[in-house]
Amino acid sequence: MIAGADGEVVGLATNARDVSEQKRAARQLDQHDQAFRSIFEGALDAMLIADDSGCYIAANEAAGALLGLPKEALLGRSVEEFVDSGDEEFAQFLEHGELTGKIALHGADGVVRLAEFSATANILPGQHLSILRDVTEAHRLGQQLQQTQKLEAVGQLAGGIAHDFNNLLTVISGYSDLALDGLDSGGDAVRPNIEEIRRAADRAALLTHQLLAFSRRRVLLTEQLDLNEIVAEYVPMLTRLLGEQLTIQVELDPGLELVLGDRGQLGQVIINLAVNARDAMPEGGTLILRTRQRAGDEPSVLIEVIDTGTGIDEHAQRHLFEPFFTTKDVGEGTGLGLATVLGIVEQSGGSVSVETAPRIGSTFTIALPCVEGAKSPLAVAPVTTDEGGSERIIVVEDDPSLGSMVKRMLEARGYEITVADTPVEALALADDRSFDLLVTDVVMPEMNGRQLSERLASDAPGMRVLFMSGYSEDELLARGVIDKHLRFLPKPFSVDQLAREVRLALDAPDQAPLIPAVS
Image 1 (cartoon, rainbow, N blue to C red):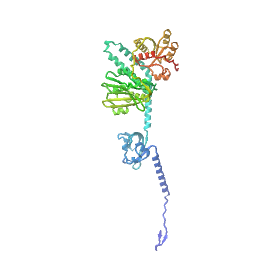
Image 2 (cartoon, rainbow, N blue to C red; image 1 turned 60 degrees about the vertical axis):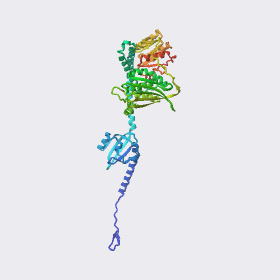
Image 3 (cartoon, rainbow, N blue to C red; image 1 turned 90 degrees about the vertical axis):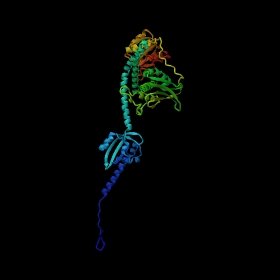
Image 4 (cartoon, one colour; image 1 turned 90 degrees about the horizontal axis):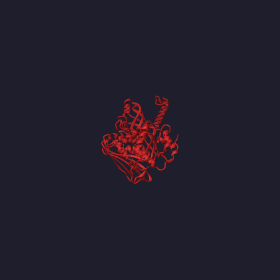
């Protein structure tokens, strides 16, 4: 207002400034701030803002979930609380101020999570933004895929060499058995050497079986089984395989119920655990094989494999059942034994647990669900492996050294043996004389063992058949070359195993009719 000399208002002066642009800018700034807050709070990725001291001044809900705390509880916390001080990528971020990469976050809930992060310094003066995405599950799946591909490669390699390798092992182990049987009292000097050859063949066969069983995740051929019988059956082999430094003690519960499982694969479980126990007792000790019935709402049968060895340290316990994990020196372990055990037991609906103490030993417990109402016999009859006979047997094997070895094995048991190198030769021999049993390889030139048995069965329907092969039974079943109901002996085999299967084949009830093989 403008006043005159007398104090009267004589005019009005005004000063106006256009602030509409400032108002619009303020509104836009407020809108941007609200948009940022909405994005910040609603983001699925963790977003955190830290000050120059490294403490969080803002965090969203996803950040709270990632770090195991409510987002409000993150405020004022230091970045270093959630990052390993030895993390090189985090150290680079601190040094260079801006980085992307992966980082291991140690949450307040005790969970370590892997996160991809993008960090930018000074988005505002003294404020530093980090965006993190939880990739723990994606990383796990990626590792699982890599592991699967690795196992597929191992399976292809093992499958490719298994047949020829098992044929060679059959010759090595078979002639070792024959040499041991032929030693007289003057042969004590060479006996340990031959026994060591035999043990080496057993170890090589075990490795082949582990590779095939683990890498292929084979389908189990389940049946009702008495675990007492299986343990008793494998004790003679374990005695030979584990050596004289170990004492094997067997404790069988006479009141076991039956379980559903694959006989061969559960035998593999016992072997793997026993070999693992042996390796834990380099100076010798006691191996206990124990069966127990466990009552409860879900009754189960337990197999306990107990050693008096060195025990298992905490680091090894965390990785015990991982494929290819081993505490042995390079070249001395495959890391497949316990991984195979876990795979077989879980496929059978069971579980594996471990109790261990340093310098005291370890107990591996296999728990398998019972078959309701099925009881095993009160006593386990010993498995007879040395029975012979006088029946006529034709052996068909395209590997002459193997055919000759089988002939010697069975002739030593009293059988009358004829050997044919090819299926065509076997057919010609069968035209001139009759046989009680056909023992034949499965995969051969001209025709396979199944086709040969069908041809012979048309003229000699009462003749029994025993198939043998270096290929796994699963592979032959998948090809349709054999059926589950047919008697099969996998290579390599011992003299006793061959004699047992031959006797069982000859003494079995009438053989089921052969179903034509898939061509």
